[in-house]
Structures are given as C-alpha cells and as structure tokens.
Image 1 (spheres, rainbow, N blue to C red):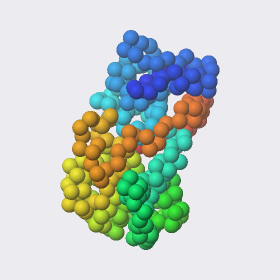
Image 2 (tube, helix red, strand yellow):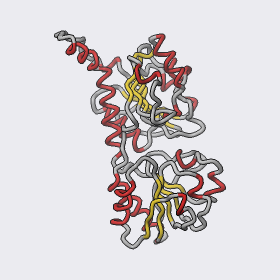
Image 3 (cartoon, one colour):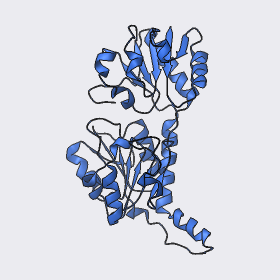
Amino acid sequence: MKIVFYSPGKKVQPWLDSLAANLPSADIWAWSPQSADQQADYAVVWAPPSELFAPQQKLKAVFNIGAGADRVLRIPHVDGLLRGIPVVRLNDAGMSAQMAEYVCHALFRHTREFAEYEAHQRDNKWKTLPALDRANWQVGVMGLGAIGARVAGAVAGFDFPVKGWSRTPKELANITTYAGAEQFDAFLADTRVLVCVLPLTPATEGILNARTLGRLKPKSILINVARGEHLVEDDLLAMLATGHLAGATLDVFREEPLPSGHEFWDHPKITVTPHIAAITLVEKSAAQIAQKIRAMESGQPIEGVVDRSRGY
C-alpha cells in the first residue's frame, strides 16, 4: 500500500510517523514536485495543488485532514482530476470539543463583558457591570453537523436559549431547529449571537452578508469558526459602524494569514484568532484515517465520504 501526504504550513514528520505507526506495512511519503510521478493508492491532504493529482492513476481515495472538504473540492477541474475517486473527511477526531470551547469562550467574553472588565483593570477601576440575563441572548448556530451539534449543545448547557439551522431537518435536545431556505429568516429573527459552523459550498459562500446580519437583533454578535469565504467583510464592517452589530469574533478569513494592515487587526469591535478554533489532532486523525483505509481495503463501507453534489 502506498500513501502520499501533503499539507502546506504543517509539520510533516509527525503525520508521517503517526500514519506509519497505524499502517506499518505502508509506503508513505511527503509529496513534492520532484516526487509527483510516484504513484499512490491513497492521498492524505490539506489544500493540495492540482499537480498532486494530475499524474495519479491508481488512487482509491483522498482523505482530507480538516473539518471541511472545500480545500479539495475547489481545486480547478477537480472532477476531471479525481475521476469519481471518493473524497473522505474526518469524523470529528477531537475537533468538536475544541470548537465548542472556542465558541463558548467567545460567547462569554461578549455576554459577560470581560473585555470591559479588562479595561477597568488597566484603569484601576473597581466597577460591577449589570448581571447577564440569558433570555436576552438568543444564540443561533448555522450548521448542525457533528461539530455544529456539539457547539449548540454546549451553549444550551449554560442555559442560553439556542436554535439551529441546517440544510435538512435535524432534531436536537434542547435546541429549536430550522431547516432550508424557507425557514432561514425565521431562524435569524430574535437571534442575538450568530455562530457560523457551516461547510463552505457554492450555496453558503457569502451567506454572512448585509441581508443576513441585518435580520439579527440590534447590538448582536457574530462568531465565525467555519470559513472566511462565508463572510462578506465590507458588510460586517458596515454593520459594526452603524452599531447594529456590537462585535465579532473571527477565527477564519478569506486570505490566511490575515494580511498585515487589514482593517480587522485594529478594529475595536473585532477579535481575531489565527484559525485555531479547532486544531487537527495528528494522532487521533491518523488513527481514524488508517481505520478507514483498512476498511476500504477489506471492502467495508466507511463514514465521511463527501457528497460532491452538496459539497460536504
């Protein structure tokens, strides 16, 4: 069995070591232009170039080492390059707990006004702010897959009113759910904290726009932990300028790293983090990928195969 690995900006050796530990008989190597013609049975990748796939004639599957498969599906001419080869995403692998932690932290920072308390500390000011009334902070979670459902459940566990929206109907304990375009406006109504955990598809690109954000309650909050392409940046800045939005916590951006001098860096109402809401855990992910490869080799079905028509 032969496996090619590619992931720019990540330490390659831990991945190679973990995959080898789980698949000791496999021949595993890191892709480079010099090794492009070397044939593989499986590709394990993040944001791969089209040049990785063009020479491949034996691939059985492509494993994407992230929560979404968009970095593979958006490769130019991907259908022709992959020729029906399945693209497989990770099933959580430790990411949902991290995402829930991040969203809850951002939620508490806004609702409990911790930034204001930090400013008071700098000024040596002892001042108590009004207590939080959770009933006034309806949280809406966009995307109710494995990660979104975990996020929504974690927030509901702190007694916030929570509702969720997804492409198809879902039922979750303690969550009011909405589905489809026809229920989108009803989902947005009365939402004061909007959390985006959607997969990136042609249908969801730019979904965080003036129309969507304008339907939230006044002085609302945006938390985006999905993809930067979901957000229309100028629309967010305009909403913050008018005061309709009170703040935003952004972990993902259209251009990463976020360029020096970008307006988001110094905006007093925006918190920026460098795409760390959920960091892929190498050992857990490698073990899951290895288990799926073994299942495929023995002819068994696997979870996480991406539906190309939906984009996730």
